[in-house]
Length: 198
Length: 234
Image 1 (spheres, rainbow over the protein chains, first blue to last red):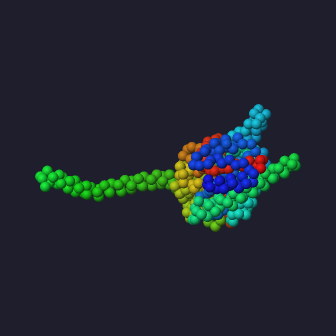
Image 2: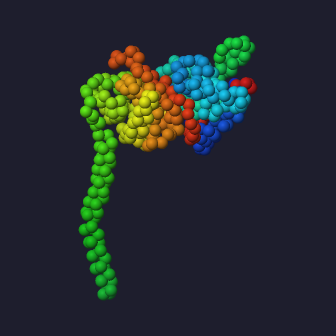
Image 3: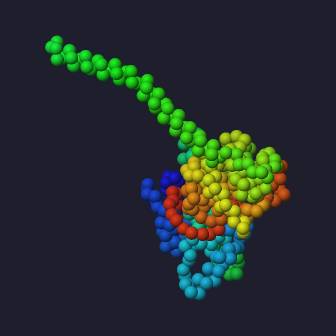
């Protein structure tokens, strides 16, 4: 897994991104440790890399977090539960700038979905058999990230030849890098045309 | 050889003979212990997983969701004849037990064979709480896809078979856990909805990645590598 992360880092740095790995070795940072690190960086994008133990071998899937009562594919950032909306309305004026930890991702759902779409387009091209569309799932790590965040899972550790898994590293890195370049472009395009939803 | 050495050798021989005679008995004891342990485990499982039957049981065609044998990574509804109770709690227990024990082939299993449903509660507002044994967390293959399929198979099976259940909370051994097996968020409630007409027996396999838990309480532990890119500074 770390090998994948390092290859992705090189590809991202080649595109001018500053890359921070949430772990460099065999440490086991908690979900909150990782979230603390990422949430302290402004204008960050979070990509969580995973290798599954199941699934069609040689495929890859991008996930964004899905909150309750939110229809999959709903692009609205505000599609939150009444509880969340209540919190937002109460906390907004009273604690400006503060984010409820457990709902940190809620303000970034649409942007995370956009990023997952861009990533899945790339993954589908590079890994035959991968789904054309990204998936949504309550991946725990993403919930406490206050930034556009996706998880990418490649299949699988059950591959008969470990070399095949290693060979997925470079196309995976290229996919992530290309998706982030496109995502950055879409954010800049949206910023240039105010009022456009994203 | 002195007399003392002869006596010592004789005593040694006696000990060796005694030890050799004891070996079969020791082997029998060890095997007996193993059998006793296996029997205890079998008894425990037979108690926990004994078929749940109620006076209102009627044999009906239930829809259970297992992994598709043809499209990996997706769930597929299967029609199974089951005696199901009119009581929603008992019915839910029967369905989940069948989901674990009546899987057509091991490859279609979404829940560990050793997992057991310890308890199932249903609140008047349609909130269900399913308390599973530790095996659900320890033996479910770790990964977003596999954990999602495990939860989805439970949620969809309950959605198809117990209309009184509107959302589901999953506990493991009576405790709320952060994730199922390291990835999928178990801290919230999973919406349970009746399948749409497309989920009929002939329905095509459906991707296992749409359940969503309610946002709730915290807790850590993690395992992945996660690069964070900063897109604004090329």
